[in-house]
Length: 129
Image 1 (tube, helix red, strand yellow):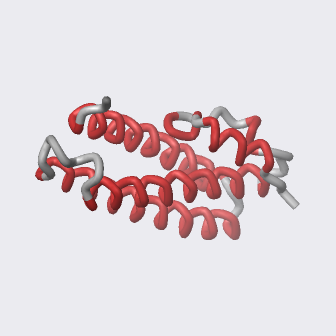
Image 2: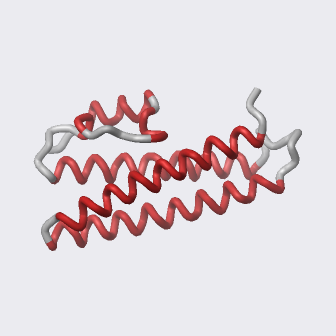
């Protein structure tokens, strides 16, 4: 069974991986045309806000008891925030690479939590049309 400390450590590592992914999108936006850069900046700002909310919820797990943390509302709230954030990052990556003229985001090496089987399945079905 996963302990609260292990869960927090894993989510913290995942947030650091998402920070790298967001930084990669920021680099890509810096090289994009002016019209696309504005669009990317808006998406990046949204991702950063979502990331900050997830980090706050993760910090809130530190005060939850070690025995009942898994079913606690704070944990469920963190999982919901995490799922929303992961999906938003995947959508931003898909949009970025589709607009760059690539056929699928699968060509991009997704890092961190996007290595999940579900994320790979979503990315492999992504359509750039």
